[in-house]
Structure formats: C-alpha cells, structure tokens
Image (cartoon, rainbow, N blue to C red; front, side, top):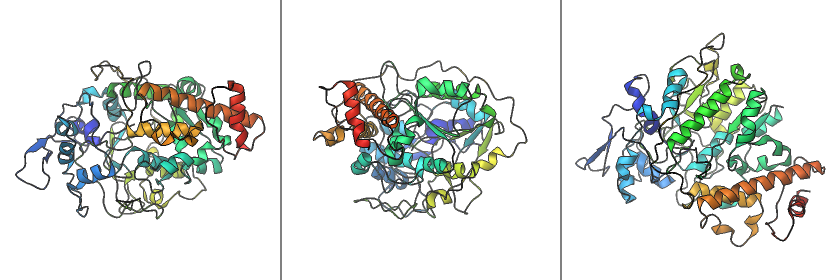
Length: 490
C-alpha cells in the first residue's frame, strides 16, 4: 500500500492493545524543531480524509527525522514533521501529518491486528519516496535510486530480483495487477518468458485462488489511478482509505476461501510513510549499503540508514491470534524488519539455493520462524472481515486531477512498454495528463505490451528476449501494429 506511517494508521490501536508500540496521545513536534519555546502540535486521532500530499522526498524526510540537515543524531529525534509541513505552506498540513485514524475508521486493519500479527518495528528501506522502496521489496536494493531516475525507468532496473531467484529454483510466481504492474520497472521481468506471469487482478485472482492454482509467490498490486468506475485503492493521498480497506478485505476473503489457505501467508505493508508522523526512531546506524552504489548529487545518499516505520501485518492460519512482532532475533545484533525482509524470508521459506540478492537482505530480519510456533494450522480464522460502511472522502474520484510524481513515473513506464519513450515529447509525458487520461494510457500500454509478447512467443521467439515496442501509429490496423511492435523482439 502507499504512503502512510505506522502511527498514522495504527498508532491509536494502543488504547485497546497496549502491547502495540503506538501513540499515548502525548507525542508532539514543535513548529521550529530547534527552538524549545516554539509552539507544539500534539498528535490527534482526527484523521479521516487527507486531501493534500505531505512531503516525502529525500530532503523532506531528512528534515522530518532529524529536524535539520544534520543527520548525526542517534537515536533519530523524529522532531521535524511539523516544521517540514509548515514549510509547504498548505493550510492545516502540520495538524494533518500529526493525525492518526481512530481504530473504528480502519475496521479491516483493526480486525486483522486482533486476529493475526502486527509487526510494529517494520521500516521503509530508504528514507525516500515510493519507487526506491518498492524496489527493495523485490530486489533488496534500489540500484542507487533515491528518487525518479529517468534513464533507469526507461531501460528497466538491471538488478537481480527475488523473481529471478524463484525462477532459478523452479518455483512459480505471479503478479496480479490492476492498472499497470509497477514490477515492470525491473528489466528482467520484461523478458518474454514472464509474459504469462502477469494477470489482471479482476479477471484472474479470485479464479486462481478458488481453483487452488495460485503460484508459490504472489504479488497483488493496487489500483494507482483514481477513476469513477474503479477508485484507487492504494491509500495514497488524496485517495480514500475506506476504499483501501475494502480492497484488503476482498483480498483476505478470497484467500481465506481458497483450498490453498492452510499453506498460505499474506504480508501487507506500505512502501513508505508519506510524510506522516511516527514516533519510533528510524534506525540510522549499522545498516549496510546493499551493493556499494551511492545515490546521485546533491545528496550522495549512502543507503546506510532506514526510512520511517510503516504499518505491516502478517496473516496466516499458522500465526497465533493477536500477537505483536517487535524486533527480529538476527541475523546480526543490528538487523531490523524492513522491505528487504520479504526476499530474505522467501529465500528461507523456500530454501532457495540462490544467494541473497544483496548485503541488505542478508542483513534484514526474517519472519519464517513465526510459522513454526504451531503444530497445526488454526481453524478459527474469520472467513469474512467487517463491512466497510463509511466512505472517508466527502467526494468521489477526480478524473481531471493532475498526476502525483509516482503516477508520472508509471506513465513513463507505460511509454516504455508501448514504445512512445522514443518520441521527442517523452520527457514531459504524464505531466500534462489528467488521472483519467493516464489510466487509459497505462492500461492500453500494458495490454499492448503483453499481447505483443504473447504473439512473439507463439511465433517462436526466444523466451529470454525482450519485446521492444515501436511508437503507436494510428494509420495501421491493430494486427499489423502488434506484428511490427514484436518484430524487434528477435
């Protein structure tokens, strides 16, 4: 899911679940982090709908964590959230970033926390925006990206992924996407042999689960574009968190009804904190750089400290009811749960012969031991979760809205898939699009890319080849167009 901190989503659960490291109600930040006489903004439980998008660039997060450009404090003071929000000159934003949800407004998460496990020390891998953190989920590195890197977005990020490790070990994986699979930012996933691993969520997820045909490793991607017919369900401001709750409920209930349920674990996490306050100091020392790559100027980030804590759930019939998982027990005295814990745990669970992907997943805490505490799976896991009755947004999707930075990146990915990236207009693609236009463009690009791949495979192309598409030419028929597009795959 997208852009929410642990305290913002789950902090107020502490009232009924004192074992969770949440909010006491006394936490605060000052308007001027370095002035002890400056006014305070105290945390509240008033979060309902967030319209504006708090700062979450690498420089904004540095200010939120340290209150200044000096990053030497250890533990991190977590005292600059209000100061950074005030600098954005958006009315009420400092109160917004210090707000959290009442547990009854996130009923699905409240139920999952009570029924399964909450991980209350899971951190984003990088104190930066969406894309670098999503890369760590799948590859334990962002290959030096601390923000949008256009060249790599076009050509595809080259690092090895957990999907490659699974493939090497003859295990299966599947990606169930809604608008566009962000996993296609990885170059290796664009190979023809993986074309059939991408499935439209609405068409295939429930079907595969019902038939007991889900692959060994599954990624479910959200709807990133907010349109009337299908509102976004990724929780990115200004999207409705109630829609995200409905989505999580749907995924859980589909899995719970599957004949594979007793062999299954579901992990739900967030890419990064999205600028919202969290009181737990982010780890700033003894975090290994994954691969020796240093970030670009002007920050030259060394990838040696983590991002802010995010909400994370571990759900399985092998997980005891209502537990809280705090720090990991290794593999080093300094290891933490962070996004690289996912590929690290997959390696352990499936006993993969492949090496760890980077130094980071070799260091990250793993959670496979929590599945071995019971001798038998539970038979009391709820078959359904509570109804989500209240919309938290006072209006519906705004299809004419401008795109967020992450959405622009998705459109740049789409332009790579359909060949438009070679056009002179590429650098500005997405910037002039509305959300509605972008959704149509992205869905069309994915459909064309996957169809061209399927055609190429049927024509005998090598599975390790990549489809390189040519720009859309409206004068051609679709069949001619698809043929010309995949022809370069050879």
